[in-house]
Amino acid sequence: MNIQRDYNQELKDTADHKYAYNFDFDVMHPFMLKSFIPFFKEGNFLELGSFKGDFTRRFLPYFEDITCVEASDEAVKMAKNEFGDKVKFVNSLFETATLPTKYDNIVLTHVLEHINDPIAVLKRINDEWLSDRGRFFLVCPNANAPSRQIAVKMGLITHNTAVTPAEAEHGHNITYTLDTLERDAKAAGLNVVLRSGIFFKALANFQWDQLLQTDIISNDYLEGCYQLGQHYPDLCSSIFLMCEKGK
Image (cartoon, rainbow, N blue to C red):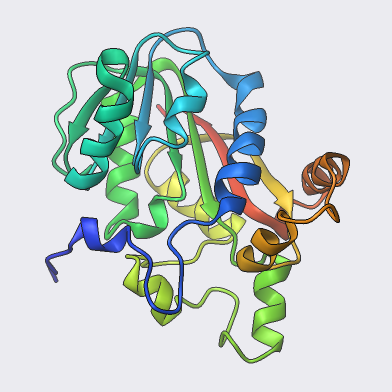
């Protein structure tokens, strides 16, 4: 069933749910980048789903040739105003985007859960956009994060992998676990080289936003949560697959 989606509207906060939190920008983005850096390949870079460019700017010191594909024309306009000609933008759906080359590094973070046919998009990445030597960095919110499991026990969510009404308003179609994310990556033909997690997380995003305004949480504590997540990926805020091109 083809449902017309308003990608500009999906990016906006609703009455009972924020689209993006300070926790995402100030904590998760730096630790995602830290997880990616050891595996970056020399060459060009493609970010799929760049929002307003908040994560994009973190890649500027590492790559001279950056392309972003984003469905929201409002988000693209804001990002272009900031980056000018430093970044190439393609305002398109992943399903219909035409890109001029293959890429040595492709990043898709907190986007796959929004896609109507995730395997089809992953297949395009493997077959059409990822270079033979390239690496694909895939990150999704984790259904089994302790914060989410606590919400289930509180009766706020029916089960770990549920898509809540608020998440659906922001375009979520699925809530992944490590095994279901790897299932879809392999179904698309990708070679999963590394499976991991990013940041052990027992509090909800809104609780983290409140804590980050205090002196209760130190940088050492944040680093400890990141390091602990390497031991317990299934208990992280986000799950992370590093993939290479499948044959």
